[in-house]
Amino acid sequence: MRNLVTGGAGFIGSHLCRALLDKGEEVICLDNLSSGQIRNVQVLEAYARFSFIESDITDHIQIEVDRIYNLACPASPPFYQSDPIKTTKTSVLGSLNLLELAATSGARILQASTSEIYGDPLEHPQSETYWGNVNPIGIRSCYDEGKRVAETLFFDYMRQEQVEIKVVRIFNTYGPNMRPDDGRVISNFITQALTNQPLTVHGSGQQTRSFCYVDDLVKGLISVMNSAADLTGPFNLGNPNEFKIIELVELIRELIGEGIQVTFRPLPQDDPKQRRPDINLAFNTLGWQPVVALEDGLPQTIAYFKERIASV
Ligand code: NAD
Ligand code: UDP
Image 1 (cartoon, rainbow, N blue to C red):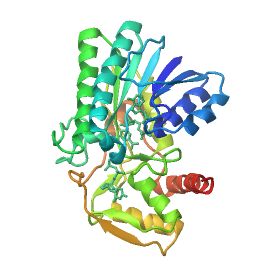
Image 2 (image 1 turned 90 degrees about the horizontal axis):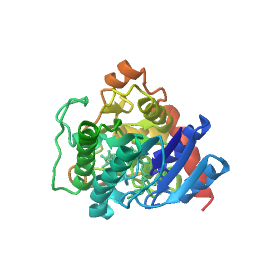
Image 3 (image 1 turned 90 degrees about the vertical axis):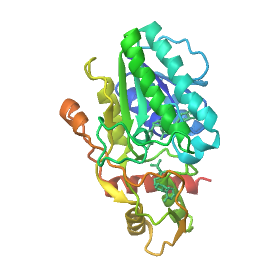
């Protein structure tokens, strides 16, 4: 298999590239390095079947591949909000470009969509049949609505152009290869704790998220890509164990140090109050479910950040 992984220099993309290479497949990673890290790519250059193209998915792409995993898009609120117009372009124009490539080359294409398409959900847990509660004009909209349009494009290319599509909705995922300045809650809390800074809790910390370890998520991505042609999704992929942000603080204290301080910050606009995936569809059709508990994934993530901080 010849795979194009867009966003392969990013956190999840780099793990996906490695997993595909370890299966003996060929990987072409395309990334503009806007929120990714060149170090994530450099370690993959040890594989002869790996190549890297520094490029942008909003630019025309001509390449012969069997499969396309589209992960290119900044995923952390500080990154996707730093240039919101570019974020929407990445999801909309980037998806259009890649779908055209799939239509002309016959490649199968998977879209990394997101639980953000459910917005601040009124249904809990969220199943794939829920249409969501999304603010179309807020500061998160460039990401949420961009990803929603991308899903629309995927299904229209399937119906109109007979493109073989797969759509996965990823819930909060964490693990090694995240940037220390990524800005998401787990990377923030770990880097703050390791550098003796107070943990920045937004709001009262009563909002919930469900955290999936990256190895579980990558198995889900590959399983969806390899599924029968009629299994388009959307598939929720995430860990259904739900935690309050304030409970995450306690876990970090247990793992890094009881003396860790906390500082409370205002809750950002449109911050979802709760989020937990219903993963019955992925489990019943693919047999996929996460196996790494937060208590087991966090130590591996902490070890990675320790090494990153020590090497600066
Ligand atoms: P990340 O920011 O680490 O990776 C995204 C990668 O895409 C980066 O390497 C970045 O440089 C690249 N990129 C951004 N815009 C691009 C463009 N226009 N052209 C080419 N490359 C571009 O984020 P991540 O956490 O690894 O997320 C990967 C994908 O999974 C994203 O599409 C994200 O929306 C989706 N996702 C992630 C999560 C999560 O919790 N990590 C949750 C839901 C969805
Ligand atoms: N959050 C927090 N402190 C931080 C970063 C994030 O309390 O330093 C909160 C954030 O407001 C949200 C939750 O943690 O309620 C998850 O945030 P993240 O950015 O990781 O993911 P998302 O909001 O996109 O699910």
